[in-house]
Length: 458
Image 1 (cartoon, one colour):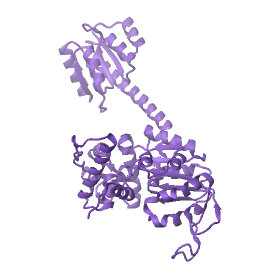
Image 2 (cartoon, one colour):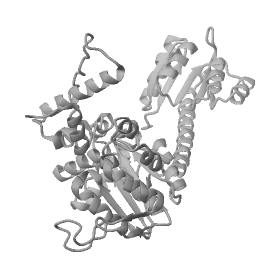
Image 3 (cartoon, helix red, strand yellow):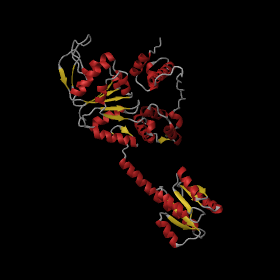
Image 4 (cartoon, one colour):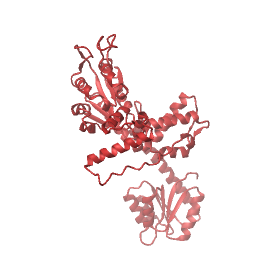
């Protein structure tokens, strides 16, 4: 028997425990032996077992008592009873109580009968678990549009996308950088009746503030010095489709009223024009910032937030859905195998353990980059732990507030935030892009906070 099933052996006789343990280990099983039923129950709470093999006649709690307790707790394992005093009525009683088998000790056929019974129990367990896996696979989708993941968190998001795809309600997707907010927006578009229309993505933090109005709403010839011809904006380009506004928290305050009007009335004017343009656009926004905090600070309109946030979708960080890490890693392995004409079979056990234990501050995007690099560098059939090149950063001590200068909670939070930002700027030699990436915020948000706290490198 090559299967490495875990068996819990319960027998109050030392010699019997030793003899049965040796027999089962020779058959290839992992065996844990204990001397009584209460100890067995404690072990079952601490460790995972597949089969319990227990003597019936034991002082105190008997094997039958242990069987009933296991069944009452609904533990997903098989119980086999053994006894030196076997008889048919007791065997029938044991089977009715839920035992898988009943084996008599000290007969010429005991060893053979016991090993055969365990093999049958193992086969039954295998069939049950395969069936459960099949049911789970049927009920859980590994992927949805371009999204990958079969965790319960992702299943809820898939269901929510299905529900809201054809609605006209505003949708605000929130989550850390790298969690896949743009993929969720695309999935909503592709599942909607607008799927044949354009999907226009705008990274609000990536467009210079002075160009954003023209970029979004268009302009007419002569509206400003460089406006040598009419230009349609992105909202016109997205007509009959979907506009995805990423990093909406960086959208300038002076333009938010104009954006709100598009949301409410589906109309606007190009820069330099008085002609009202009507559009049919579904708007989806995303942010990795707390917009309600920005409202409190006067950096975001409350009415715009409520219009965007009719249906909020919160994406979990990768560390919050660890069961998806290997699913995603294997997906990226196949993707980059194809792109780089490689034929890497998978990851070593050590590499898989490292992937599962890593904290993933950059979320799915970081995992994708790590796997791509490993595929490019790996020369063997399996990606090793060394190829992943993952290192847990040393924890940075949080700034300690001064008791003498303590004030309101809000003041203390602001003081701590200022200290954290200043320390990050110092570590990155005041390079804003690197600092923003370390802090998990975008460059524009960092700049606004630097202005707020008076942080300059001069």
